[in-house]
Image (cartoon, rainbow, N blue to C red; front, side, top):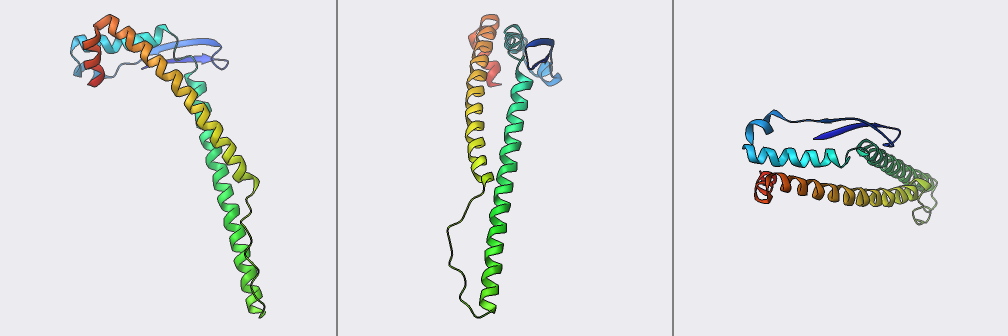
Length: 157
């Protein structure tokens, strides 16, 4: 894998590193290792990793925000149901009919969760498209270095 420690939201390049696993070095034939190294060096040469930390942080924060909003919305709905049940029990105890069930009201957290979920899906779709293009470009570099058949074998392995 290739990693870059960019600064200022990826605007200022940082130190780039190429990491190789021992299993990779020991488990691949030389030509396939060349293909894998070519692929990773393709990422390295095209600066594909500059925004990696920013994108990962964005996706993490969005997932956290959506999860928090959904939890709060569920808690609000459960509290509303509990209040309604308590009110109905009090009215029955007093010999009065229970209150009419009204439609469930949803708080702002429910609607915010919907908006943030849509935004998170959009961000994920956009970043996946960019990532896919970067992978194809890196595969092309690997195919030029090691040949298409060797690159395909390395990717399958």
